[in-house]
Length: 156
Image (cartoon, rainbow, N blue to C red; front, top):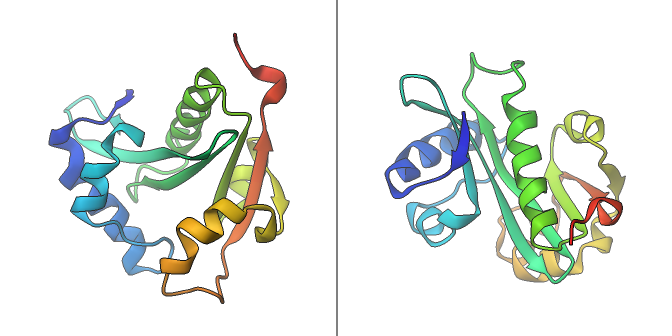
């Protein structure tokens, strides 16, 4: 089941993200960062109440948001959980009137299947100046930038 994250989910979210960060597949997130941005997060909870997936939709600008921290526990992949989490993020962006959603990833094929297209990171100046400058990988980031335009799906 997908739902908005709650305070009691923060440590589970951080542990999921940390699993992938240790492998170099994503950047780590501190507890402080997750608490401060908890409203951005969705989780996928199994029947027993265990959080096995998370993703966040982070607003960058008036027409731009980022899907970030997408993580699904090893052993639970290939069940559509990641797709459902990204779709929840996109739905929230659309409801908020945000027309473009992007992701930085090492798995571009996953996002391409969801309608994202590869772009040059220079097309994302708000991301570069707000987050990337603080990253240890800057300016040699090897993640792939993808953007999806949902302006045709906006609900008023």
